[in-house]
Image (cartoon, rainbow, N blue to C red; front, side, top):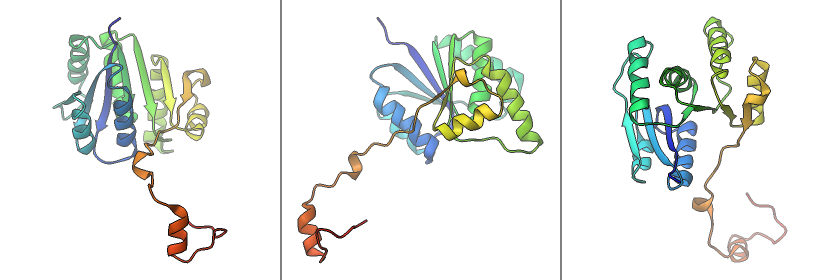
Length: 196
């Protein structure tokens, strides 16, 4: 069976926590899925890293995504690429891509919450209301922690729509290939000393 066509959508892919997690997803899954990445505003360091896997990374050239014609254009692009699953990251990307994927008739949309992102001002209240409505058209909401999951539930999103998947960290760069006992002795530490 052919791998599903999976489209990830982010605002940008500069250096940051959300961007690093998207990079980790591509690092682990780019051989298992037919994956594409769209950056809505700018690409950046992690977009270049993902391109090295041979993944199609596109910077969408629009300046004002709140123009309805741009959402229609985005929906058309989704249909043209025959996307089967949309995975959006962050509030703006989740908002715009869920509207566009609904227009395009994409059957599965997953949105990934990388933080508890709503403020308490009027704009935040509006965003919460929009998110509640869009959650009805979302197959699954992924929260990066139980704190984010609980925050989202407290704002009125149905608990059965939200799954916690903790952020991953590649531990390979942190592996130390050294004789720990010899290093302790070299710096004058006893075997019982606690060292950070």
